[in-house]
Image (cartoon, rainbow, N blue to C red; front, top):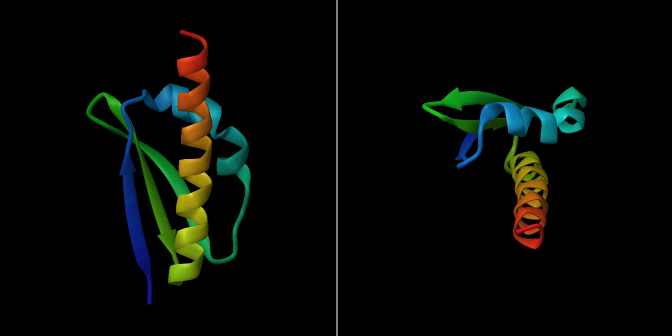
Length: 76
């Protein structure tokens, strides 16, 4: 069975590609993360072979996004 999750962000695709460059270069056996442009914002498309792999990939993306948002707030 295959699972798919899309996370829409309020940030630009260029910013997200820069922020996630290491994560996007990695190769995972059971999941894949890609970034696309949705209107003016970046969208993460996560596909996984099983629910555990999906959860791990979603956690990876949201963890980095959380750190980025906290950094933005601290620098304001």
